Length: 248
Length: 73
Image 1 (cartoon, one colour):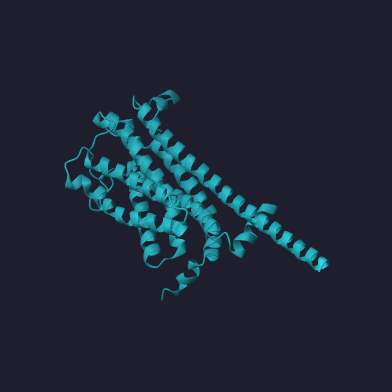
Image 2: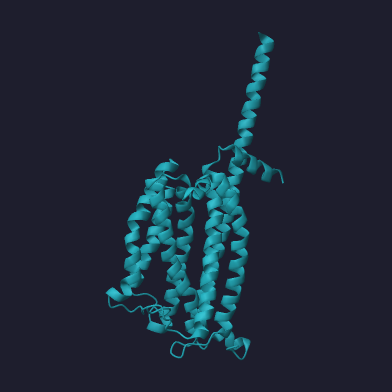
C-alpha cells in the first residue's frame, strides 16, 4: 500500500522531484504574500481597540503558529531518522531547523513590537513568551549540534534526539494561554472552529498564512537540495550534476 | 483603502514605529535566510567540484606514474 513511497527514499529521485516543486513554491508564496501583505497593510480595517498596531497580527500569528508546525515536522523527521535511519530524514532535520529558528525569531520580534503599544511592555516572562523563547533555543540547539561533530552521522543523531525531546515544549506553548493566567491573549483566529474575528480581517490573514506556508516550503526544499548534495557528494549522479552545472 | 495620504499610511495612527519594526524585521530575517541558503548551496557545489578536480588530477598523476614505470622496466 505504501510502496509508492519507496522511490522517494532515493536521494536522486527526491532531488529531481524537489527541483520541479521549488519554482512553484516560490511563485505561489510571492503571489499570496504579495496580495496578503498589501491587503493587510492598506485595506484591512484597523482594530477598534488596538488601532493600526493590529496590522502586526498578520505577521505575528502566521509566524508563531508556523514556528510550532515546523517544529512538529522536524520532530517527525527526527523520529524517522532515529528509528528507521532514513538518510533523507536526517537531511530534512538539518534543512528544517534554520527555517524554524527564523520563524520563531519573527514571532518573538513581532510579538514584542505588538506588545509594547498593546500591553505597555516589550517583554514579560509570562508562560507563552517564555516557552516560545525556549523553542528558539531548541532550534538553535539542533543547529549547533548538527555542526558540533566531525562525524555527520553522529551529529545528526544527537540533533535528532534533542529535536525529539524538545517536542514536549510544543503542547506547552499551544496551551500555555489556557493553563496559566498570562498576559498573552487567547487564540484570535478560532474558538472551536468559529473565527472570532470579522471576515474583513480573517481573509487577509488567511491569504498571508497560506503565503507563509509556501514560503516555508520553498525555503525548506531549497535547503534540502543543498543537504542532499552535501551528504551524497561521492555519488556519481551528484558528480555528474555538479560538473554539468559548473560547465555552464 | 484605509488611509487618506501616504504620510497617514506611514504614521499608522501613532503606531507606525511598531508596525514598521515588525514588517522590517520579518523582511530582514527572511532575506537573511534566503541569502544564507543561496551561499551555502553555492559553497557545497563548489566544494564537490573541487573534490572531483582533485581526484581527477590524482588519477592522472597515477596513470603517468604507471606509464613511466613501464618505460623504465
